[in-house]
Each structure stands twice: as C-alpha cells, then as structure tokens.
Length: 70
Image 1 (tube, rainbow, N blue to C red):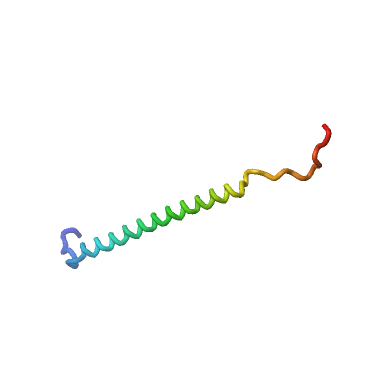
Image 2: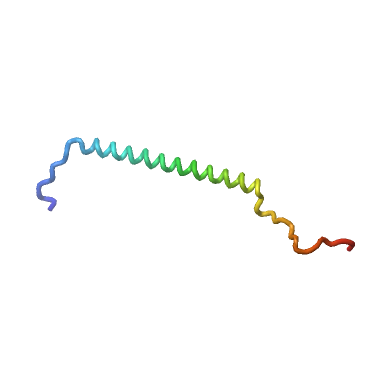
C-alpha cells in the first residue's frame, strides 16, 4: 500500500488548510471570550441580587405571640 502511487494533491492544499485552521482558531477564541463574559455577567447579577434580597436572612416567625413580662 505504501509502495503504490501517491494520490495527486492540489497545490493550494496547505494554504487552504492554514486559512481554515485560522478561522477555527478565531472562532474558538471568540466563543471562549464570550462565554467568559457571560459567566462574569451572571456572577455579577447574582451578587447584586444576593446583596439586595439577602436570602440567608429569614423573616421572624409569626406563629407564636411575642413574649411579654418575663
């Protein structure tokens, strides 16, 4: 199989491969950058919400009456 004739390749194959690889690299970088910005924005929104709502604080229970004259 290796001793047989090699297939003919187009002369601009390397240039086309380099262009395609460059496009894929730029696309991958853009996707990673956009994902990072979206995650940072989501974190900022969450922190603002948590600071405003303070979900860890509970409202006082209104089941029992207040204690008077201990």
